[in-house]
Amino acid sequence: MRIIRAGDCKTTPWKNGGGSTTEIAIGPTGASLEAFDWRVSMARVASDGPFSDFIGIDRTLAVVKGNGLVLITGKDAPVMLSSGSDPVSFPGDTPTSARLTAGEITDLNVMTRRGRFRHRLVRIDKSTPCEFGDNDIAVVLSLDGATTINFGQDSTTLDHGDAAVLSRTTTGFRILPATKHCYLVWLREQRASK
Image 1: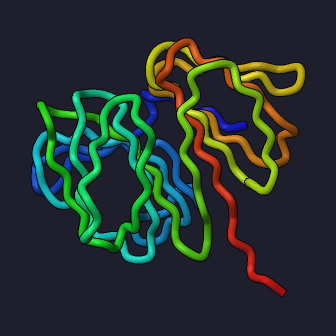
Image 2: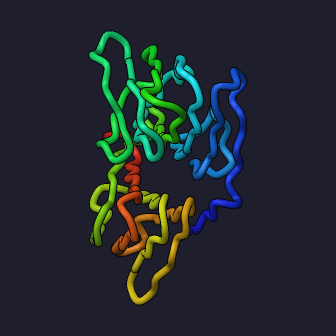
């Protein structure tokens, strides 16, 4: 298990000045935005506008702070996202824009390269046992208060903004969130069929 502390995450402003992004975890480690297989990040969105185009990328978004936004993806009906609502998935290469409903928000964003990885983003609001099953990697993110992760005879505590990256070599684990703002990202590698 690898622990990523909030203070070690790098935040970069958007070129258009409409917000900033904090990268939490990326695979492979140190990959660029053009070469990642998967990426977990948070963004502070301060104004309405279009999303960046990510060709060949699947995305999932959850609002974790603020009043919310309306997400418009291609010709689909607009979707309202607010803090605590279910995450929404969409293709990163379909024109997408967001309209804030009442001020700035912070969102959690998971991206995977199509054909390389698939992902699923789940909000954890109570003590939850987790088994990897077909998944290869789990990322646990604590967003409000402390979250404890028990694995085998050991445990670790994540503070606000911290994350843990676990690989399938870990037998199983339990997440004990202090609040309802804890998220689990499941990542599954897409292997070529024989």
